[in-house]
Length: 101
Image (cartoon, rainbow, N blue to C red; front, side):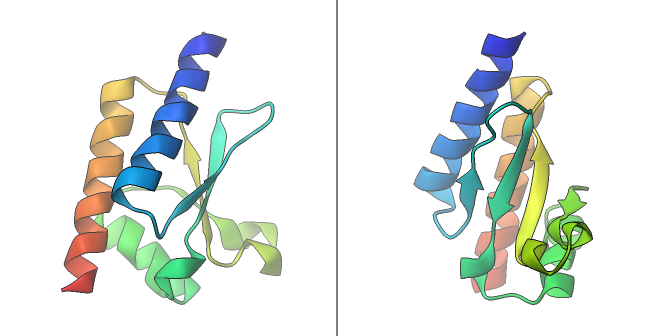
């Protein structure tokens, strides 16, 4: 199980670097929750949440629940089948690309 989750963490990091470089993965040390640093997108927190919820149809944890320092971040649970994770990241990629048009 731990190896599978680590594989999902690595998959997420690689996917973002290759396909959504404006979003950086903050890799966990002992968790299955990956913080996504979205500050390079230049969105306010409400706009960021809208991008994830309305644009990508994803329900992630809003980083702002952790205080002011969490602004610009979202938290992704990677303890899921790889196919589900891949679909979620692809939906996020599409939403980011649509936003740039």
